[in-house]
Figure (tube, rainbow, N blue to C red):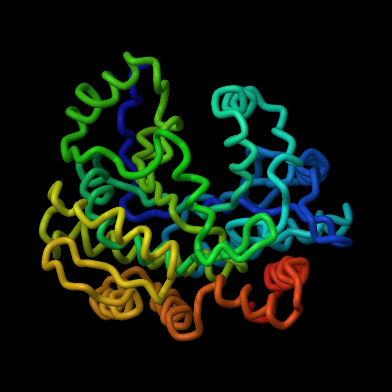
Length: 375
């Protein structure tokens, strides 16, 4: 079927999606409890949206369309509280984190939904290995041209979001030495990575998507697992590289950091993106996944090497006025705290050292998701 027309939306509005782990509170392994959780949550109004994901041990929650940081954070907290109440009734623990530290992929069960069953048939064992957990952020775009400018203009900043959100150092019971091991699972899919460099929507629609559809490889934008992709039915671009943070406060801050960055890019305060910006894309992406905030990236225009921490702090200074207009200065303060104190991967490694086991890592993640002290 043809690509849907791009449905323009209010510029710089936001929506957040979080993929969350369902955990057995006794042994802290994943629990095939999605059906029970969804059934209980469906018995009364939910403060957002909740739906199944690829396997039975995960769910996805999402917010309404938001513009302001305080309102986004308030809704995420209501969503968290509703999940905790349901989990307590069912004896199911819930946590963030990009991977479960010790689950075995072959134990996972594909959720009984036609699309997930189709993907399981198509991708084989990769579908069960896709029991990983990410935060997706949608940003509203007033036009399709703005969407493509953001899609490619953000490539330069994408390593920052990987490093800031990284919360998946453990997989299959071992320390992977990556801050974000989750993205290695995403890279395995054939339509992952970066979008093709096109800045005109009609060209994207007729020259790229139509040709891809003709091959039979794709039928909709859902078939692309790009790091950032346009969502024409929503009128947004969707950032997909973030691991799910361990608490909703961090999730809200990441979304509003992206919102402020997009305001800067739409104001054309940076040169328009060009194809050569992608020359260092995979290298920078790897540095962020492997080393997190300790990574060193190369600026695509100047070829200057810089630490991710320095790059983030410099970016924060540049977008302070944008954040003030958007009333999200508190979100930038939280980003600064992450840079100073370390990301969630660092926290989980400290917990493993203190507790002496990967089970203790999950228990710490469950505690972190439950924290309400900052409300």
